[in-house]
Length: 604
Image 1 (spheres, helix red, strand yellow):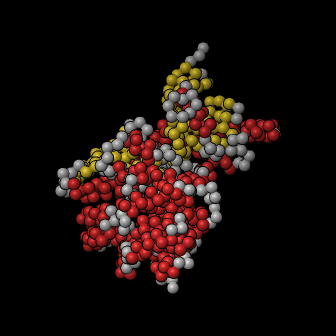
Image 2 (cartoon, rainbow, N blue to C red):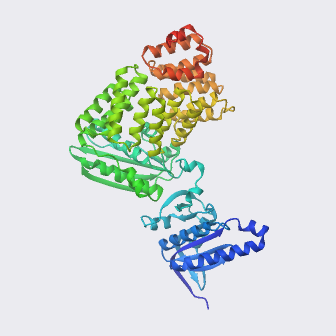
Image 3 (cartoon, rainbow, N blue to C red):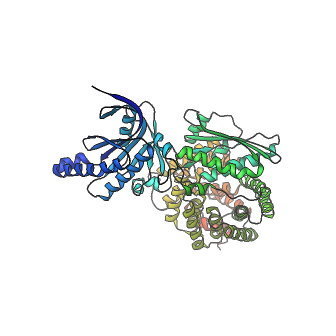
């Protein structure tokens, strides 16, 4: 007589990697491995209060009453099997309703566990989101999101996680190990809407969004869209699902801020970009001084929702500095001015932030960056370089364990042509935050200016991978590759133009995308469009130094020496221009023997 019971159970499937091939080569050895596998697993399953249900060829199935017992047993089984060089396992686990019938078990819970095991990498434990949710914060268990998978004969896609074990790093693909991410682990933080009666409070709303972007951007295996891309949607009414397609992300965080005196109300919600469903939401009614705790909580909750689990180290990384609130408000205003390239105003506001809190490391770094930018692009004034030097040192002294301080310091050193010192600071920044786009990008520019083109190509490539929507790093990578005699089929150049087009779709008046992209368009044979892009940039901002220098490059390539020298001269008349960069930039090659070129660069 058959008896059946329906219950919730955690099903574990294991499989010996390469068993069929082994059976074909050495049948006796295959049987020995099978026996050894059974002898290894049975006592571990029983020790963790589980039941070994059956063997299916080289696979084994066990059930546990709790997800924690199942995962701990799987970890021990995997680590013991990896210690034995004769075989390797892959393991899949799912928690769901199953039907026990005498000594057998059936149901979707079994099927899903089996399918998860089938897609697991050799030497890994893959689990469903149901299991991941149950083992979150369990001591000794860490997980990381892998992908969302449509499993065979299973109606709905399943979010799959990997249990982090001593051998997990062996299973990470090169793309993942360098700090980059799958499409599923991606998020765009939209500019929070200003719900206050005062439109001048926009700076505060923007600051809340940017702080969350910066916090999330330090986490590995999480792709965070840059501020420049998400803020292009500010004030526009576009369906979030459409934004998800444009930015190629799976998750979108949106919110609103109401600031009235010393009171603060922030609403935030995480949305699935695929169907518009709400994944998480919260409302915070607090005092203004609580803004730092609110930002930290939003970043933590969102990252946990997207990644499935945060380690204690990751939670610590999310924690941002808590300066005096008056200083913070000046800092946010200064950063808004910096993004708008109102650099003198930004320096004034950063100084007010420092006056309100003399230990505010981020404000010193902001002030240093503003002066560095002024020195490089707005006059080559030695006073700006001195101010950048002084404030970058103060920032680093106050916050030696933050990547921002090291990047700020490295930028100044690179402008001062102290390239060895700059390299040490850039490397330290990358060590502290492997996702720091600014570290890779500015290090790449420093290496190019130094003449180390091979290094610049490596760094621009990393920058383009960290920020997968960025066009500048990929355009400069294309240039470095051409100088090295590589990328003969211009694949990187064409890819960079694709990114530039996407940026222009978001912001048609981006003069950097237009002018920098014009030279690459010329390289891939799109000469007419190249000059259309440059002319648009010159119409929008005829005195932008980057537009002038990029225009000089384009005209030099086209052999129009007179126009090239005119634009180059206008750029240097503004007091801007990196002569070290120009010395190594092949686009200026047609100009090098021109007396006027030598006079402009003081080479005579």
